[in-house]
Image (cartoon, rainbow over all chains, first blue to last red; front, side):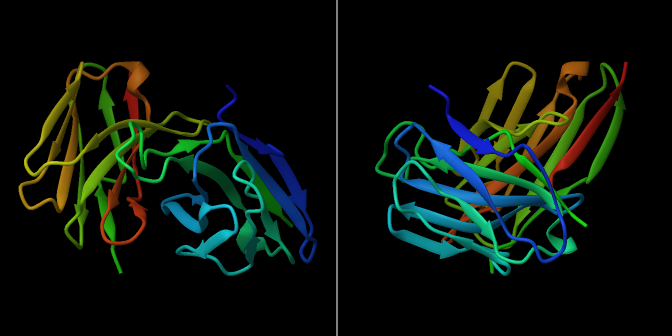
Length: 117
Length: 109
């Protein structure tokens, strides 16, 4: 049981380049989300999904796109990277309510550290 | 929108001293969660509080949820070097789970 797997762990981009951060979970969680972590800012929600085919914006969605074609995968796309997107990105998933044990408790991936020059 | 403020931002203690971090929400919460992130690691779930006035303990850690369900605290008794890390609260209101800024705990052995 791998939990939440993120790739790559580290990435350096030049301004204007595009890339995709991958996130996969094997826990059959309905809810998946992307956060960015910056010093002194805590964890800020970028985008989230409550199931395959459903996505919505979080607190800081600009410059990022997501899609959810399967329950397992939730990639985050940067279409034109900017230095302001230098950050550590975390993918997290959970059961979505229903009274199940562990519902709404987030399991995080190990993180992806992105530097945009 | 819903905001969750956490204080202090940093705390440095001597090993054996107590530590407390506080979390305040701008709106009433349905529940609050606490996570710990070790240096270089990812956030890991510690506990969830749901009921007004609820108090839960995990060994040396005591978690409280305020009567009005708008504030919470985490208290660590007699800190150990293994307690080093950043502690986050996350409040769930009518909207999505909102994280506080975190309290970074460092310990002098």
